[in-house]
Image 1 (cartoon, helix red, strand yellow):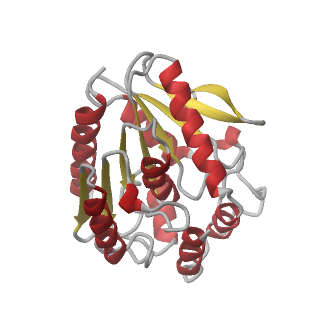
Image 2 (cartoon, one colour):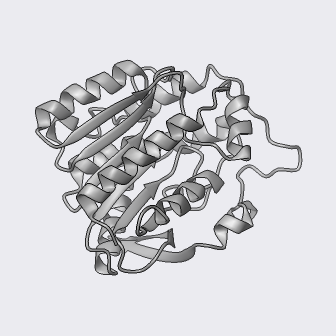
Length: 275
């Protein structure tokens, strides 16, 4: 996909964070932080002729939010985000679909490999199946959120998946090959860092282009740009900060993170309601 190629070209300029010598090619799910992993209920979702794993956290019958991974896979940080989302306001039921079918990257080169191999239209089908699962299991309305690769997919779902009730995307935009954002159907809120260097994917130019297309769509929308922030600025755990520094991303801005979560809460509360 064009989106993947854009991100790969930019990422290839960054230094790789090497795996320790004892590491395997991909990090197994068992290696994720146990305190986060223990809060999730693992389920399986069927779509067409395939089944995929998903991880659910939060109270039943609450509004649902499908949470989409970065290019790393279903790792500790996307699980941290899902737990946080499940605890916002009166609570949400958060669901992470495993788009990589169990693989999680330890370093940039492996993340590139995994994202390059992703079936993007198939991922949209996974998202649709996840939204339907939540609605069939007690969530009256369901939104989609995502980060980096997941942000691009979240926006695409707001174009391509009619069951989606709202989208909040972080630093990622879909290629026109995947989704024409001027034809968005769901309300979309998007967040970008002013210093993001992923040109054509998550930089300020991409953010402003998205905003123009969303204006043309007629849907409710907001596009926010955070001064002094680079890519993946929402990732604030100690492990994530170390990983960002390994990619040359040294900014830390808790104020921007808090503001983005506040905007997330207001947007999802407006369109999904409270539990």
